[in-house]
Image 1 (cartoon, rainbow, N blue to C red):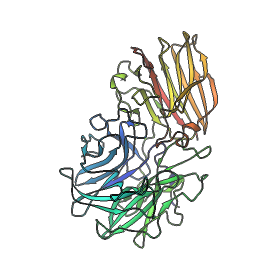
Image 2: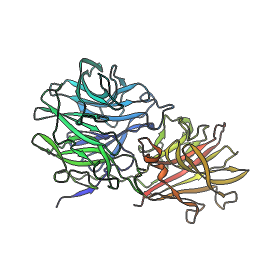
Image 3: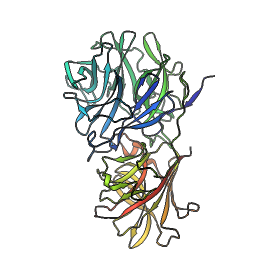
Image 4: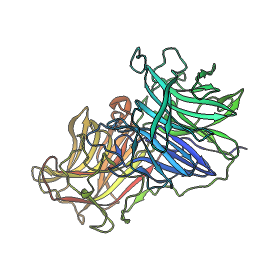
Length: 522
């Protein structure tokens, strides 16, 4: 009996996956947009158990995100390996364009970026041919002029990998499978049995997303589309299907000759609301009559996936509780844009993350004092134990569930008319409103408060405790649907984090966080 595991293999906000194999080791990267550090890198031995081993873009010299909108920044990375070196190529759509970083060890350190002059467009990838020559494949507006927005071409040009320069002629190699296709993008090139195969995404990254393929006996084309395209889509399955907008795939062949595709998809819940963003799924691939066949006999991405013929190599699950006992944050933690490192300390008070109140606000295109993790389940509990004494009406600290700067909820302690108050604040369409508040002036504790967000699908409950035993509900039945891309727009999923701000005022105050806790309950 075949063994199966849960899909997605990376739940939560992990879009645009790319994969490569080196021997018996597999490496996977995903997009991060305006979050820092950029481009997490994962390692696996079996394609189903993944461990994050680092973040490729982990310093300002590699990635500048100041002032960018949340769905700008880093798009669609591709990872490849050739002759002892790892290459990651991606786009910073907010400045600089397409660039490559390299490493001998995939865990890092990775080089400063090599920006590729003349590499227009987005979604770049690399292909190393049998003769060692390297090619750049990308997406840009048709060179003869597009008929509409998203009328693109997939283009190819040789890349001098030693000097990181495009050389020779540029070729438009495909425009997608359909006559008036929207957004042919996300190209990846492969060679099998002497033929070149071009795998792309079409239809945009929404509900009409799809994977299509073309092939050629020459790398420069002409490329001919498969007459059974698209080879994968869920666009025809209805809005109530449990996995939607599948696409943006990358193929890998195992050392045993099996083929698999990693790709993005979303799991709506409570209606067509995609709070989790685009996640990374896995699907088996075979070859039939010279073309890739996705999930034989089914043709869809399923909620479970057949385990490859590889020794299962489990990894340590992520801890539900982070006690901040180390001098560095775990790899899964993120900031909004490039952080001001002076606002964070794991050493000033041992066992705590001390966060200084910055003037920057969560609702601005800045880098506030905010540390977060991804929401990875439809129902969950998120908690933080905090010590904080506001000194004036401008100061606040607490926890947040964040979709973007215009759509979020925060549960914060602050002064209201001189009284220590816990406030639930909703930001909807950029407008803030206090939904509920509680006087915590005379709390019977040792200075700490535990803040909790509990999600039961699209219903949120915000509560607090002074002893970690009895919890007081501040408000329940709070609508989480505004935290979906279907309401808020953009390309990201939700994050949950700890936050403090002096709201445009200068402050020397800080909040101490003893721990955070996150557990999925679905």
